Length: 232
Image (cartoon, rainbow, N blue to C red; front, top):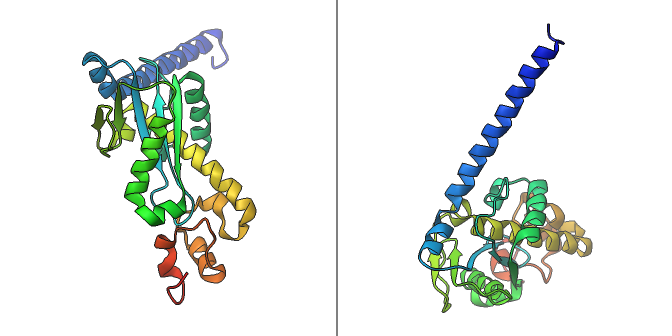
């Protein structure tokens, strides 16, 4: 019975129906994440950019922002907030986004500037740089809850990387870009474990700072408290 052709056909049909259901469910999820893009288009905006940043919290390395302009109604299966994705899934989706996006801009603000102007202003600066580095200029920008000093109309969205496909795509591009930078930095400073911690303040990273001091990649304003005498 279990090897009969009839059973195989039933099983195959059940699997096909499950796949169809999952695809429909995923389409519904992505449609919901296109709400702000759809509203913007209904208001007359045609070129919509989503901007997000990565790297506000680390002790070392830059803050990186990306601005992504996607085609209308582009469905990329699995697209989501980068923090909800595995590294391998982020890499996969990054390639898909790069393949289909109308344009992508990157903005990088390094640790010395972060120390000089503070992390919030550095974040805004990186986002504006990402927008300015686009060749395709957006009519409107969707941001992850940050108001930018730009002339382009913008919509700040709380938890935007979970609610907008454009912002989610930007979060993935920025995360993959920054992670690759930190892996490269690890080659020069392997004792800090940058390839694993990406500059974040893990216990091992903090212990390395206490043992070896800081590098030029470290944010002085973030790491001073971990040094014995409080000096840099």
